Length: 149
Image (cartoon, rainbow, N blue to C red; front, side, top):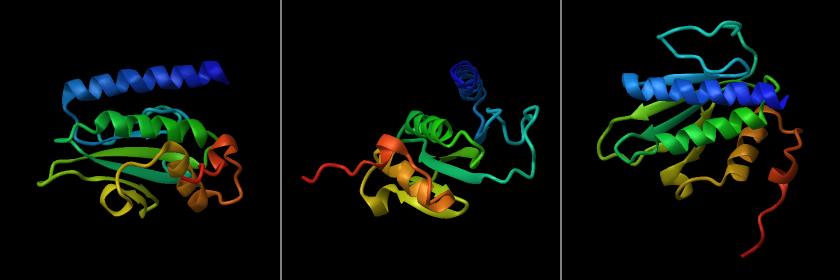
């Protein structure tokens, strides 16, 4: 329920703070027992052979997009909190010239900043993820069509 989600969000925030302080190069948030640190420590209760989709968010560190990537991971884990997403991995990119930001679901790129023209709106990102992992899923208000401009 809401209290469990609050605990996960609090643990997520504490882990992010710890990771920033320790300069870790990659970390993973695993649902539903998040967070999980790849190569640093395991989270109690997380199965290695999870059935859910694995999502990877790559972001440019020079552009300071970690907060955006973290926010997207929270939105994804909050929406797909039924086991359909087993993990969200944040992958900092240090390459020149920079400007990288992409979201992959099981190695399928669902959003690329350069290809798709900027950053996704959260409802659009959720729809693209849903279309791969559970096409029949109702996303509620996120399924509403954006107004024509």
